[in-house]
Length: 335
Image (cartoon, rainbow, N blue to C red):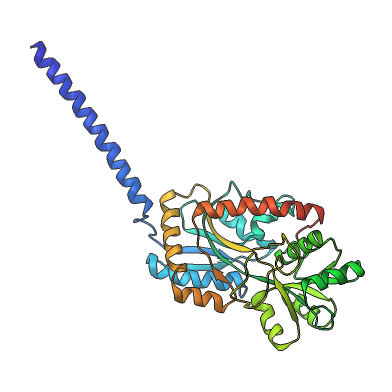
């Protein structure tokens, strides 16, 4: 009888242990299944972007169209521009962390806390990175009346005329403003920043001769460069750009150490399930790797660059470390 009780208790323990193992295994299977995000999405997904018509908006619609097909649910693009991205970012940060509201925006969003007080979100705590989306090369252009055809010549002229040359941008705290202040810092010159109300105004101010130089988005500058109304000197990126073939980088053209790669990223609210992040990341990487999608991105002046969530998170940290000193020394404040 004692042996029977012992055997019975042993059987119970084995049964319990097997049950625990089964439950744990089932949990692992469910978790693994969740990584592929098979149950997501079950309804339309909102992608929050900047104001209509801008580069980020065009990019969002290209990505949204592709994800609608691959996810099997409508990707709805919703524009919430203004406040240098703070309005869009705050909206997503405070949305339910279920993967049905995501953000696509340029890195001005994650640099904003360096340039403005009381930003209503914490870049590193309130978002779950999904993927880098694209990069857009900026280009240093000058009015053709300015007697320079190289970065070295521009630096020499600026040093001989301190405070006389001016560069235009679409507003204080923009990525193009940062490009100009990085140029001042590394070249040891002082060119004046003239903020316009928009990128179009900054372009027109340069073409009209109100300022002598500008850092412009490559796609916006290209028609003016081709027409001869502006002279391009170099791209701000660390590598030559296929969007602006033949132009050297700032670093190779006479300003060692200059690198301003500006990117956009896709985020979800913090605490979004890892399975959802993984599913979105996989679909975005597949989409951005397609040759026809790459070509469509290039046609609107940007380069598709998908990444892992970890790579996007690392980009945020690297950008904050790099630009904090430039922003502090130049006393840059966002509009």
